[in-house]
Image (cartoon, rainbow, N blue to C red; front, top):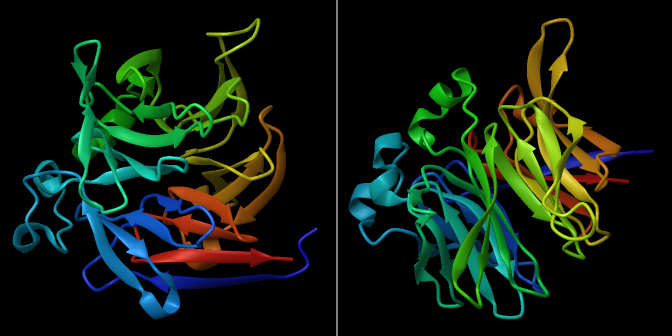
Length: 308
């Protein structure tokens, strides 16, 4: 039972807004976040603050892109949507909404492109990603093969079911399409033993489990139903935090929540973030150092929620 709670925030630098996803370094507490104008920022604690670490498109210029919130600038400036480290190689993998899968080394700057398409079909909306640490395999989401980030509302209204779950093998440098025809997938997280991945279907209001190994390999089952599930992050205990929403009564409005779920979809904890985010959606909830770090593309800060 939660006896007490507190909320604080880390303000992004001036002109930066829309933190979408967070990736923590191993053992340092330093984290990285992608923002709306295409930058990937590195946070070095309250004294060091933020510094610009990297970006995803060679066409990006500070004069044109810094501070922009114009969606039409995305293909030029980039829009990092998913971040995750492979710790043994100290590589930061990035899903950019427009340019696809890329990776940055410890020096940052321009990300090296890894994949822009699979089976001849270009990624239209590269979104969440996760890395299996022992193998280095990268699991990632292409939310739609029809609509890009600028047309996300059209995809939602059309109940777009062209999303894909994919895997990048760093040894072969090949991408495999694991599943097609998903309803607006957003987030993905691989289990510790790589026996399955969880995938959130944002448009489909559900979370599914796709089996990678064992007698049920290459099969899928729905394990949880919840409005607007977004990115999923694995905890050190092997369960997961998922950003989602719930219907507030009696107004029937959606408010942002985080849910801790097992690999079977069982909910062990729900945190309502409405007091700090109102009805703004959140994109990610990640547990680190006994706190939850919250990302939302609608604000200019990183939220930190602590409970006891």
